[in-house]
Amino acid sequence: MWNGKDTLVGYFDFDRQINYNGQKVTYKKDIDGNEKKRFKADEYQYFRADSLYLERFPVKTVGNDEFDLLVPRIANGKMELFDASYRWGEGGLFKKKGYFVRIGDQPYKIFPNEFRKQMADLVADHQSLNLRISSGELDFGDIEKIVTEYNEAFK
Image (cartoon, rainbow, N blue to C red; front, side, top):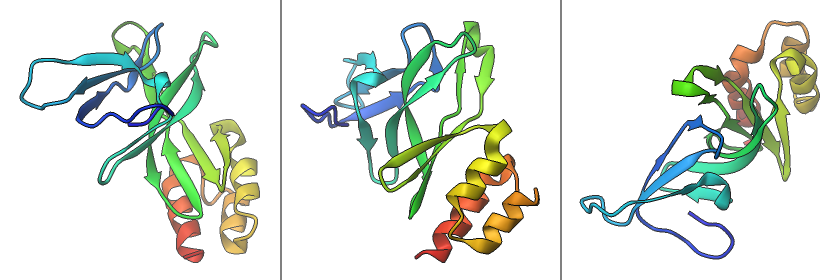
């Protein structure tokens, strides 16, 4: 885990629920040890393990509070897909499904109500995929399939 200054090595637990302090991460240097540290996720830029990569992105709650969350990358390639789903409120009452897509260094927050235009623009260099999105054949629920197919075409 890296914050621009130091690297932590050990065992981590990432909350997918946020509260007024943001997302919390629990860290243990030794899995069998009792000593734990908790810190805010927004203190770190990214987390990398063998098969897991999380990166910091900003999200907003219904009340327009903005928090930085470490969110997992679920597809890698020319287009990266990050699952920015989270819960907030008392007992995780509210939940939000969301995604970030990144091409090169440019991240894009994908909004369900703007999905067709956003994704059609992002896959403009893949004509058949662009047409299937523009026609409504593929929608927000198909985003993992879309990113996978896009990346396969550009391997």
